[in-house]
Amino acid sequence: MNILCFQFATSIFCAFLLLDSCLCATLKVCPAGWFTTATSRLCLKLIHTPENWTDARIKCQAENADLVIKIDQEKQNFMFANSSRLLVWIGLNDRRQEGTFNWLDDTQK
Image (tube, rainbow, N blue to C red; front, side, top):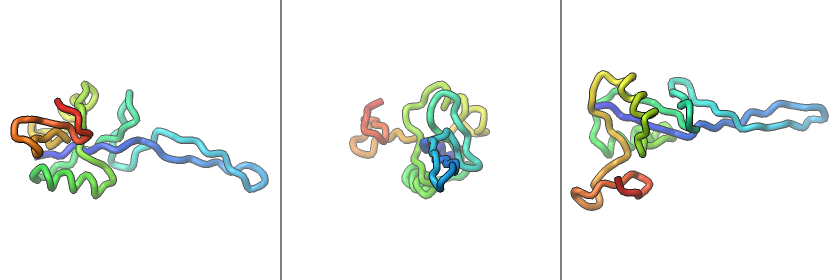
């Protein structure tokens, strides 16, 4: 089983100017080992390890991320291009009510 984690791609870049002041800008930057999406501000990382859903989420959270939600075409392309397996843990579950699936942001599928 694979895990697909995401985090928002933001980083603060500061350039020092004269008189000890600095100019800061927010850049779209992902940590090493993460993939930057072209159309959103997300970083994606596919972790190849067998886990259950809860352990998969904990593993993402340990990387300051979470299981990916709302799979669009870009995320789906990333999964298929980077996974040799078809099984991937994502942020959709029916833990509250069996058979009723919700994303981690509490929206229903």
